[in-house]
Length: 385
Image (tube, rainbow, N blue to C red; front, side):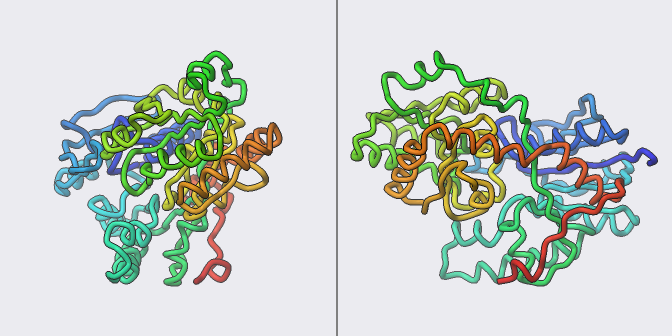
């Protein structure tokens, strides 16, 4: 197979961001290992280029979007277009459905195969931010129809994420689940001394690793702790993350058994925190994959996740519980997981082993036409609503 140059482009990638940045890095490593060159284009405080083991990372000076916790969005299309001409990619892979979506038509005019990731469920986010009284589904459908027409392939990481395209009959979909670093995130990271430090005398340690933004519903966490207290559980909640509503969550947590640990950039440290917890909670109802929840499961820690979104597809086989985004329901689910004992920890690790970055890389190479295998296609009939 002839080596090619793959352009990765993304917005909403910041030093404290999680899923998209992690995915891009693992895919780039896999593409490089397969003999291909990768050039990543992301927003930054100032324009800069740096070398990495897989190729180049080009930062384009971009403004911070207010109330997003530091996320930047590239707004100058001319700068992107100039970069595209210089980079001269053989494939393009875009993780943004807004300002960088223009890369799809740019590639089409030049006969360059193109892929766009749908990292969020647009109809759900619009409904959350704009309410149910507005025609959010109509707006999402119009936007998504244009996006699908602009790229050769739309990649969704879960069936739930794909449903908003499926209902329109979009047929250029590929279902490619993300992976997990099963070595970094491993039960051997469990540290009794660290657990005792986190517990501060509590009997139960609950950890959450989540971006502190409204759609992730961190406002449910402290009320959940209060509900556990009413159930007679001596609990300590450790909140790992940062974001636009961090101060609000910290104010809510004052006087309660809650530790605000901040963003944890070091992956082995995060793995140790997740592995040393008794339960990890993922409250967000709009998760399209939930990488942090899968990382917890890989550490052998069961997960309590929202029954909305994509996490019910992942948290199966006794690996945890799902519950409505309600503090009392979430507290009951935590208590249920604890009652399951060690079996839940074994089930969590067993479920996580179904996901690997090597599989993700192989399927994405197939999407790009760089492997002989075919990507897993979304069944239109199975999920049409």
